[in-house]
Length: 356
Image 1 (cartoon, one colour):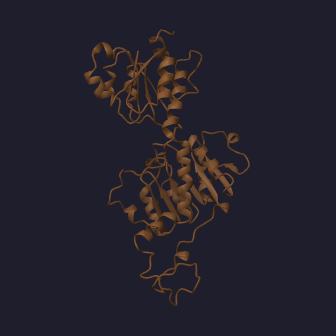
Image 2: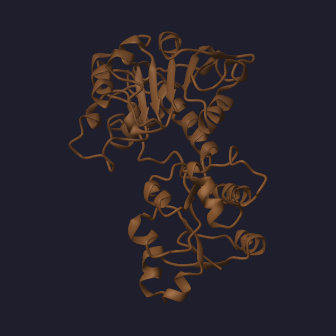
Image 3: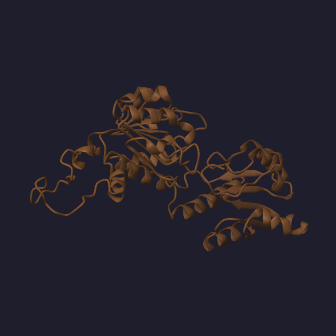
């Protein structure tokens, strides 16, 4: 039996899957290209395909009569036509939480950069905005003065203009308490005054412990100094009305999905001073167009969708995939603990495999 893999496959993982599933793990540049030249008798041997970003739809699925599973090594299988897979009685699994720790690290970094103006002042130094014409200590710079002072005595002093907030007294609201939200909350635990957790799908008793408070979104927006979004929703959670409910001068972070936030409303809130600042890693259009008004918004830290970009993610996603496949083929597993996107086809899938 064959398994086609169009993403990097560690040798150790290859050995485990070949041993446990008796699949010949065949690495290919892309599934589509491999199938174009593969003889029909070889295509009939394919039981699994593994992809990360490659799209898998009807054109590919229709060529693989005996395919059993599509493994998408991503938190969400956005590149897989799940409906088409179901029509072909093919299970789609994915690897949620693969980059949870990476995103949590990045969120904490964004929070610090935003609250203390780290990225903004770095750029201001490189651009020359905060550099001096000479190194001469004049009347505006006392000997031994550790405060940067501009050449123009009437210009703002960076120490004053970019003064920020320390974490220890702040209330942080974590919106979305899945794998990423939980990892983010752990990062802030002990660093901030209180953590408000917003997730109506999570029982209150599994949230509340010292320093953690289960909150409604409205309550969290009113109380929080920093709101960080980790809900992977296709619908908007923070719009103009919600931003109006936020504490004046508070901060907003989005490393989840662009769909959860009204970016026009955010831009207006930054310009008006309603919000103290924001940090964004995801955008409605990526790469961010050079004409986007966000590029001119004040007190805004921007990064190019980097939150999940850590070397360790590749190892974690394969660990999750191996566990998921083991659960998928375990007759005693009811699939409730593994990430199967189309679990409703379980009965017909097992019948097809001769297990019913």
